[in-house]
Image 1 (spheres, helix red, strand yellow):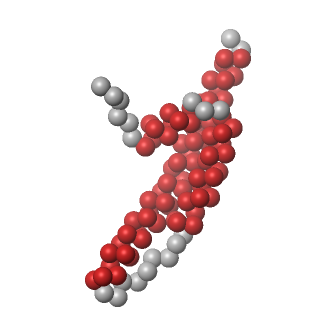
Image 2 (cartoon, rainbow, N blue to C red):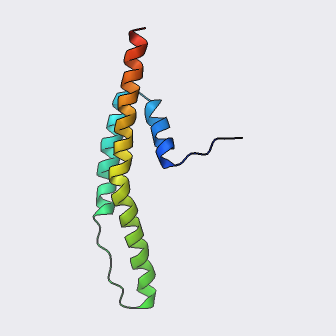
Image 3 (spheres, one colour):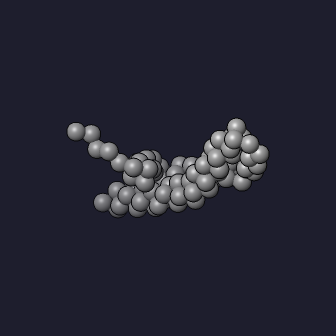
Length: 92
């Protein structure tokens, strides 16, 4: 049976299995890529039709704001683990 992991396990798995410097680059890129989404304005809902768009925009904004911090931190933790694994391979 395949192992099912969440976002944290998936990102850490990727980050620890690529070179540490690439994890650092990805952390920076993801941080700046999600920034504009996290900072976008939520439209005012003046009627029921606009309420759906406003709600969807707020959801995108919230997910991006959380992801803008969480995903880069996970990539940086993975970079540290990857660097330690590489250092241990060289010294053994």
